[in-house]
Image (cartoon, rainbow, N blue to C red):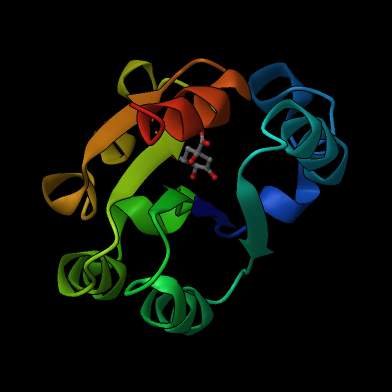
Length: 138
Ligand code: DQA
């Protein structure tokens, strides 16, 4: 099984960025833990701060991977382009957020991805990624 985690803007700062919301672990360290935990899965990781690069990556993986775990971060709430890319590919996408976007500002309650995603996982800290990966194993 081949799964990719795609992280959007500012998630390269995990560990340093607003640790009271996003925790103090870097994603690279967390990704090592995920690789160990899910050693049977071919798990890839991509991060970009650039909307078009996220769209290109979705096109690249979206017809042969078994699952995409997508934290489009702020683009979740703004990007028709990423929403359309999720709609246009055949690989199922699970939208994830570290924080509970529904308990935060109103603009975070909008998602251009959710309507075309397999499901949405929000608010479980970094465990949101674990839950998303597990959802592909059912
Ligand atoms: C986030 C929530 C978004 O609203 C925010 O813009 C992020 C991170 C999360 O994982 O909680 O950058 O996607």
